[in-house]
Length: 123
Image 1 (cartoon, rainbow, N blue to C red):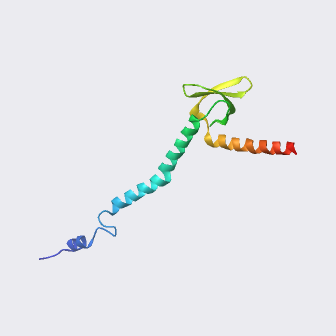
Image 2: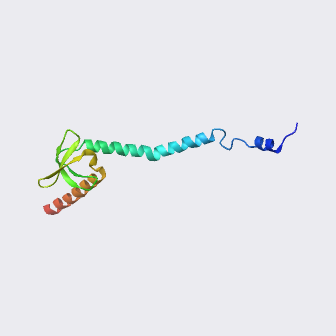
Image 3: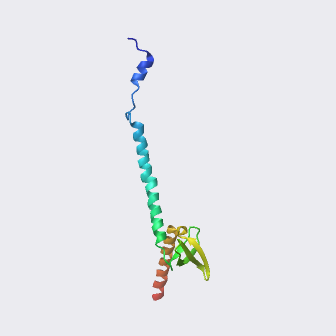
């Protein structure tokens, strides 16, 4: 029986340090990491935005994704909002156009300044 150099090299080359399922294990690991760091937080944020947009009512101050500030005058049945941006100036926008982050930041800012003004005026 005669062994050639090629046969010896092929017999010495094993499946690698992770075994035969190594590449599959790495692919599954990459998918799990990508799911927990990218897909899951993005889906959670989208769900929060939808809940926020569905909970908007008349009389609330909001900020749109375009940066338009206004007060909700009327919530229509077709999923739109009538927004009053100044006296007797109305525009109709989609509920999804309301920015949750900007609206929350605006409300915190106005609540903080109104509390400071009311505190200073009572003294």
